[in-house]
Length: 402
Length: 105
Image (cartoon, rainbow over all chains, first blue to last red; front, side, top):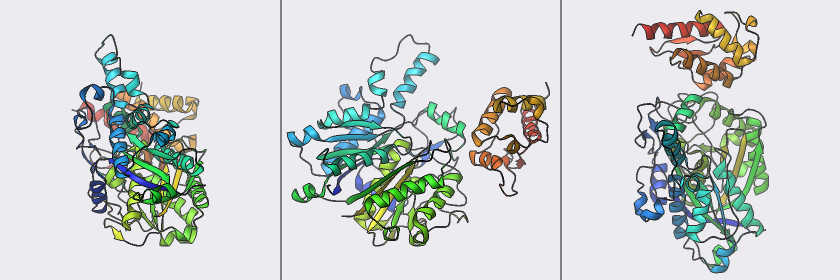
C-alpha cells in the first residue's frame, strides 16, 4: 500500500481563483457571498449566492474551444491546470497513460441545460444547440480535464449530491494507494447558479435570504455557491523522489449511507462515516485536532452534525476545533467537498485553523468549539473533512501533516 | 368552495387519506405527515391561491416531529408576526389571511 500525498492544489472559487487568494480570504473570514448578478433576479425570491466573480473564460480558452465547455467544465479544466502547475508535475508518457481523472459533480452542465430548455419551452424555438449534449453531460468536466492534460488512465465522474467531491477524492485516493494509478487528478466542480436550480432550491425552503451562519443560533439556511477545486495525488515515495511540494497526507476515507431520510441528516449515519475514516486512517479520535465540517448553516444540518461529531469523537469532541467554510464559500454542492478539502489541506500546511465566519451567537444544540470568526494558529497533526449529502450519502476524509 | 374545505382536500390528497379524517382541529403531526409532505402541501396551496406562504423547511420539520417539546411551529408572516401552523384550521387561517391581503391590494 502506498502512502498518498497531495502535491498540487488548484481552485476556482467565489473568494478567488489562486491558492493564495483562496487561503487568505478563508483565514480572514472574508465571505464570497453577495448579490446574484450571474442571472436576472426579478423572478427570484432569494437574491444572494456565492458566485465566482473574477472568472473570464476567454483568459483560459480559445473562442472555438470555449464553445464546447459549459461553465462547470471551464472551472474544472482551469483548476486542474493550476493543480498540475502547483505540483510542478511534468507528465511522462508512461505516467500519463495510467493517470486517473476522478471528478465529483452533482448537477452537470446546468447553464447549457437551462438555455436549451428555455429555447425550446419559452421561446418555442424548433431546435436545440448541437453541442448541448456534450456540454451538459455530467461527465463532460472529467472528459475535458483528461483531454486537456492528456490523462489516459481510469476516468469517471462521481455523483452523490453534496458529497460528490469527497467521494471522488476518496476513489482517487484508493487508486493511488493500491497502485491502480501512479497519480490522480481529482476534485469536484459545480456551476448551477441558473434560474431553474435557484427556483427549485427556493421551493425546498432551505435557502437563507441574508447570509450563511453555520453553527450560530441565528443561522437561517444555506447559500448556494459554485466553483471547483482540483488536486494532484501521488505516492509519498514518488513525491519525495521528485522533490515535489507536499501539502498533506491522505490517511483515511470512510463512507456510509443513512438509509433514512431523503433530505435530513442522520447523526448515526454521519458518525459511522467519520468512524470508518478514522479506522481506515488508523488515527484515534483524540489525535484529531481539526474538523472542517459540512456545516451548511441550516437548522437541522448543524444540529445533527454536532450530534454526529459527539457520537464519533466521544469525550475528545470537547478538545476538537470545528469550523465550516460555507459562510465564506457558500454551498457549491458537488464541488463543496473538494473546496473544503483544499481548506483542510492548507490548514495542515499553514498550521492555522480557518474560522467559522458570520458566527453570531452560541446555540445550546451546537455546543462545540467552532473557531468563531477569527483564525487560530494551532498545531494540527491530523484533520478531517466531512460531506453529508441529500439522500443520506456520507463521505469523510482524514488527513495528516506532511 | 370554502378555503377550509380546499385545505382539507389538498392535505388529504397529499397524504392519501380520506378527507373525512380531517377536521379543523386535526394536527398535521397526528396525520403522519413528514416535513417534505408539509412543503408539498404549502406548495399546492400557493399554486391554488397564487399566494406566498413563508414557512422554512426547519419549521416544517419541527411541526411534524412528535414530542417537539411544546414550541408549536410558526409561519413567519410578512409583517414579521409569527402565526401558528399546527392544525388543519391553522393552515386554513393562514391561507384566508393571505388571500384577503391579496384582495385588498
